[in-house]
Image (cartoon, rainbow, N blue to C red; front, side):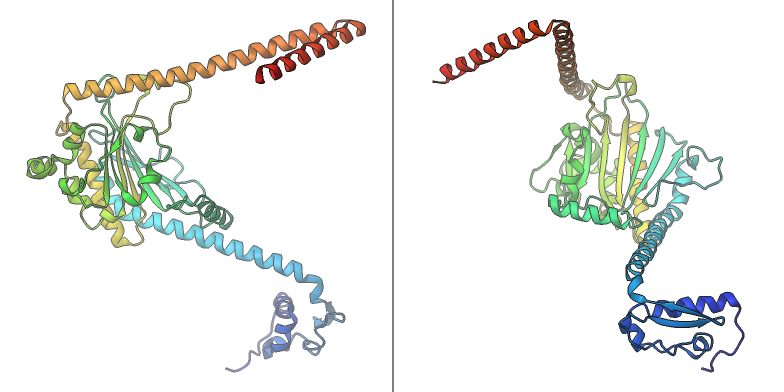
Length: 430
């Protein structure tokens, strides 16, 4: 290639000089590096390969002015600059990676969502920022409404914080320290269908299908799943035409039969009506982490039972984020099956008997009673602590008003009382 012979602007010459200084930041690089002809034309490199001991440094002539540079004086700055550039590179790369995953799924799923729902947008779509709401570089939200049997749909994207290497490192160390079988930060999509009221107290039971590889992590800390028990019978999933990698959790046997059909051929017709097995056993089944139907809050109430008017019934579908357009297309069968399940609940194809609903009500009444007793216990303890604190404060104020002699007398009496109390404990111990 012929050398560049054009004329450079002063700013370009300065940039070449800074580049040359960067290349000689470390002595071993400086000794092995040969400047291109179009750079050496403007940068005097006579002393570029001289003693790298850095006592003398390097001299450059830039725009007829001599510059003296000592690499040893700038090593820390070079390391910090390199670390900062690496952090920025990882930040923007991780952010782009997460946005690409979300965008791929949204573009693939949008035709289905727009066909199922009247409106697919964020809550406040007047800003013109599009349908997605981003919360940092690892969380995004999509909202949809306007469908029979559904009050609204929240689609939450939670991805690994590749945009924040420090948080990623913290999660990695935490998982090792706690010996967690499942990573604390995963790439998941959570679709939460808000269901309308089923009856005056919105009792519908708790049911879940969970991939066994994340069963422990899914159950951890969830209050609603404490109502359901894992059906641990041998081949429990296969008996209902499900892949054996799924664990079935249900609060009541009738609820299980209503959603998955009875064991064997007797439940074939019900399975066809609800249609869960076809999607879960299909190409997108490996993307399912959990499917949870619940009428209870995810977190245990701390200040007393949730009022009946505020009790929500939800269907939550949690998926692993697809890595490609093909996987995103396969995941749509799971979303469609969740919509079909909502239709089955709305049309009464999975209706529970009155006796089963009564049992569910009795369970919730007992749990609410326990929660209320715990809350009142905490209230009583707080009131007792406040009473003791007020009593101690009043005694201290009364003591401060006494004369020094009276105060000393009181102290001696209290000291003797404590000694007698300690001696009594020793005698009793013998």
